[in-house]
Image (tube, rainbow, N blue to C red; front, side):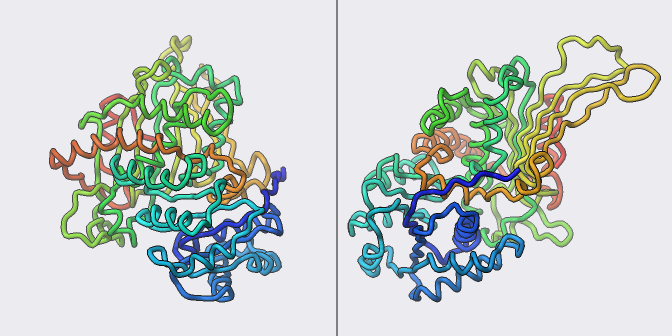
Length: 482
């Protein structure tokens, strides 16, 4: 099966922070892949903007090095690379000054889609938005892409939204969360709303509980200074895991349109109950084997910042009454794994004797690695000697089910940037959604800070603190293996 590529309209995409790490690792290699697949028209242009003084040729060479570094050889096309580099140009700009802005304005065209990617620190979002309007560079239909973090708390999120709103309408602002661009995340909506089999069962009557896990093998590494002021709650739960929760728990939207989808996600966030301290486990990894401790990675003598968090939360509405959602994320865990797992209830009455065993269906949506969907169903164990039940998987990995070409699906950034050019905000967060998430998160953080809670230690390379397992055991449940 060959995926269908739909070209976008001609565009000018300005990448502020074009010499930074995110642009080199994700944005520019992703755009190159879209170009090689024929999704970018010949008239499309990419304009790098940063403080560094350099010419177009030097910037193109940087982009070539980034593509050769961060894309494997099998995903590179020498002829395509040459043609892609010809679409690039560069303008040195001073975000806080006057230099370079007139040059940038002279570079822009009037008859194409206009987009600006803020691949910079959040402190510069407002400055760049003001400059784009002061120098009359951004048109009324221009689009801006802003990276997380969208504030540090509710107050700063509101301030950031107000700053952007002073220069751009909400319909022009694309708050990017790359988790929403993952193929399997979008397939979650397809599975739920495109199949009669699942949606009638997607509620408290049939679902025992839901587990959402984002586990990482890496530590905080070079992000230590930032991470120590953030922690797993701000860095992962408030945005990535919240989005996965919303897509899992939301009501069916009336239409698959941006505001219809985002309205339903917002309802989920506003229906979240406060979380009791007993339902939260915070951890911090300690040294193990060749791995340094969190304190060493963060270059801190002492720290109360969590590198792991597990939570039990409830969505207070009719669909999910008394059905718990267990969220878990952490650094330096046993393996890299992201998944959403729906544990259905056991059958209300078993016609088999006790020796047959009790079973319940489990639907797991794997985000990474090996994207796919796995449904465990109960069958009779083959062989004579009575009725014995076992669980077997109905496993659909995209590569196996749809062909090897589909294993090379676009990266999340590739898909989301093309959605920006199309003007489709479905997979981007709205301002009120961000503020609602912080309104739920802030009291939880404030409460553990007021109590002076310290994260419990766990070994690097483990599944996290033992207290996280106890959190589940209290409810006679167990976490999925990491």
